[in-house]
Length: 443
Image (cartoon, rainbow, N blue to C red; front, side, top):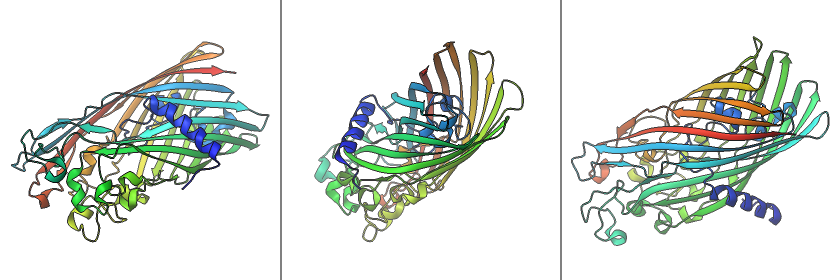
């Protein structure tokens, strides 16, 4: 789709260029390719943010919360430090080897702003990023003439997926979410956030897949392609009692322009929309200084063909389901549900400490040959923990800090390459450390 008018399109492009220049969204996420949470309080609380965490990032979680937020500016940077190692064993071929992704450090800037208009209206803007397909595996067999596309690769050694040269994906998404919230009665508010999105993508090293593609010249090594899109998030926030807050939010699918340079790789001709999602949550204050919260989040990855189609679709039936067609190969992802819990304790009037825990099944449907191979590029740990603090070092300024750990968990299963005479078992071992540094200015 086209985003207009022209000035709006150019404004999103400018914001995206600024964010991507700093590395926005180019890191492995733990729940699919969505980042764990957005904003300082969410990073401290494992993403628990539907009814908890009153900062300037309501546009990324629950626009209805904005009416309960003071006028403020939140600036932060999330330092992502992922480790990903892939391995193939048991094929008794030169393709039994281990490779570790070179991309192991990313900086993701975030911006959240909130401003009261009057007693019932508030407005703000949130800028945040997603990413999760940024991997680069540089190892090869080291043996000449082991690639599966000598017409393109000559006599070069084959990489992990039988092409040549470095092998990997790079997906980055940046979303600008202006937000308006209305407190329609005391303690209850609704909000809306248009989601103005920009994304870019590139893939390289997949020369071996050109022979099973509907568009063999638009499969790999085409440089970056980009697209714009739009959706909307709506939310409700309610202070039911002095000790109980609840919230709910829903984001539509963000319809994006297709990646035409990679229409022969991504299913449905390069379509890659941002999936719809919803969350419900609570925050309860049973004792003075203590807050306990929880969220349930559902992300509809299964609605995106490039994510939900099985890995074997094009490999098993390239004539009827070639790569890049609507039924072409994808990651075999399903809808994903995450469960989040958090606690906050106001140790002093100046210091609040927080911690959180997230559990969610991997978006991969299973550990079969229909899932494993492509998911070497998008590994997903099952459990994540976070901790951090807010320190108000004077009445107008806060220092924010959070540490997160996506816990190690090897994902393995049979290779989808048995039809190529390779087969064996493939596995990926990921974990991620994160550090968030932030500053808040109150107005």
